[in-house]
Length: 237
Image (cartoon, rainbow, N blue to C red; front, side):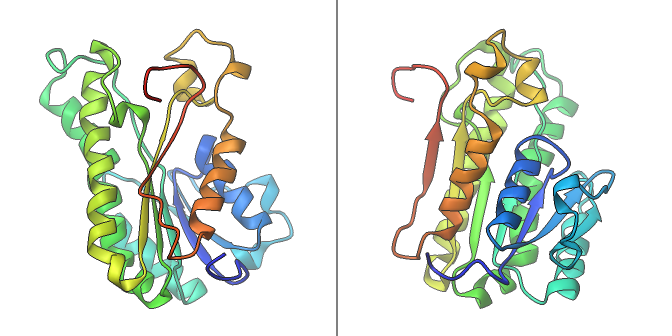
């Protein structure tokens, strides 16, 4: 590990449920302090007895000032930021022809622009850490366009993967390492609406949480630019 997890601080968006909730719980269990961004802040059951290491803030990824407020609040609470996990995301299942401007803008706003603003707002703190970590929750839809209906979502997720690489390039000399985590179907509410596969045949959010915890704990000399994980057989993933 690049440093002991004790006293390290991670900011996690979309932390009220699904992948974000599991990631936050896993990091807390490993000794991290966590700042949880949610539309409606509510202390999760797993945080009981850990008030000193759990920070909650209301967060709307479409609000262009939200990331600066979040970073300021987290720094006031903990005094440092070592990792950001940009997990909040939306999917509008329309082809690139069916989608209108509002659909495309909504997905770019939440899936790409908000993570970029979060990295920008936290940049000084991540650099000061010397081992700042950025996780962009992209998707296998950011690596291939699997269907027409996934096309508009893929457009945003391809951009999210590029964002992760751009952050990695911008911060590498300052100890920042960025990883685009690209899962296929994960057993969350979003995936349940998109596939007929049984939940137990999907990637489990707890497994993804352990992967993310591993990635942000690697030393600077073990940089992982992308991490793809799938629940089914595909030609390349």
